Image (cartoon, rainbow over all chains, first blue to last red; front, side):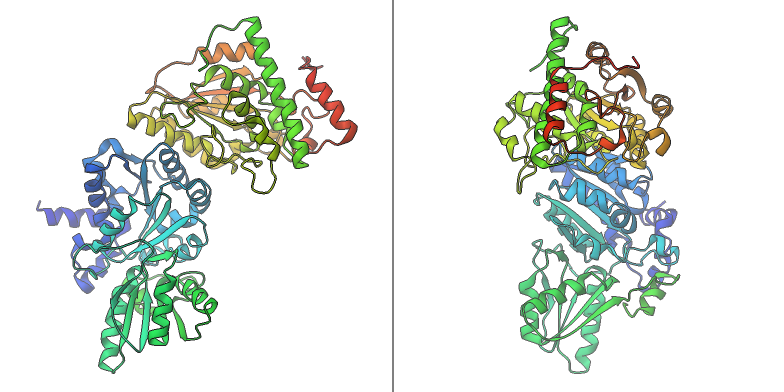
Length: 326
Length: 288
């Protein structure tokens, strides 16, 4: 079997990735560029020279490709079975002994089921645990609300001493994972659709907490995060044909948010639209609004995302179109 | 560093004195706070004394020593009984305890690993401690270290589902370097554990999960010393569970097996009466 065929076989083996089938037919994304699929590989590379890295999964190693790490570092790979709360607290115990554990599961189970473990066992003791919530947002499509993670940004960003970041694409995830090794405290790393098209041609030089302006403009700023950065760039391109010059800011760190970048965008463009793949209540848009109003910046402002409702069942691409997030 | 030795009368007497110290200090500190968990400490006073003065491989001059035994007080509300022991062992100056629960104090009702030398993990939310120990035990194995991870659990706490997630993991990974102790003091907040959500048979339940189990009178220092001395040193063997049969509130007649005393405050003559009772040391219970 060719490598590519093996990749495809593995994608469709895990139920977690069935939703990708239609996505691939829509945009033909190269599987190797899917953020979730460089997760294990990149960590395996980091672990070659950093003995602190361990990876935990809760019976989703095939879905999140933690198995790529496990194949190269079996002695530092832990599968705890379908027990997400245990996984997060076990990771905290390991972190207290000097390791930097990456605990990965669906965003819904990581952030919603594991919220208290993240707060009490990881963030409060300020331990370097990395909670990786993948297939977040509504990327699980027709699996429905139990598997959707629309509340995670809002929930995670109200936990003190927890850095909340979203991976924009595969290259960006590599950069995030590398940068995370230098952060002493806990992090929630959100992987979006699992098929995010490329925004960064190379692994970007990022700083956690510093937003990236990925397109300059003068009339409007779109502040997006994770899976919505690429659609924001597409929208900016379309607006340009209507004569509207649009700046696009990749706000990949949702907490602590880059206030300077928000205020700069407000003053230079006078209008801000936030875009996120999640419930608009409490997430990125709310964080930007708090910043603007507290600074007295009364710009034109709108939040775009999923309204405060449970989304219907449907293939991911259909859901993105339904909510105009594509 | 304490080294386990055969139980002798003077040794048992010394540890009984330490347990008495745990109880009287708990009374003193609770008076500063105005309320506290007396009875949950009284049930594990002997356990704490035996662990800290005999069993744990620790060095108070090096609280971050990588090869130290870990101790996770999963029933974190008994921390008020642990603080005086840590001070007595030299982890910090005993006078620091006078700030107990005051604004900004390192010493709250539940232990804070960031601020208190000798606390290996912050706890308070019941049901988490055994998972912490699984993580510590896996880390020790990965690092090639032979320390043990000890966990002190309550019997009421066993209703938390995460305990059983961790119990499965500990036996699946053959973490013989974990020693979990259930302070089976019989009471929760709302009454007897057997009425609220029965935990027994605790030993049989853990045995079914793949643990090696033992049962002991948790107030019998000689029995505890013998039991701990007999724990197998098999880091890849089954995890070890000890059910310590105890009495919540042990040492104070008014508190023993009395659910009204889960959290309480002794004032005036009541405080003096109970302090005198505790200073006299344990007496046999009427039923015994």
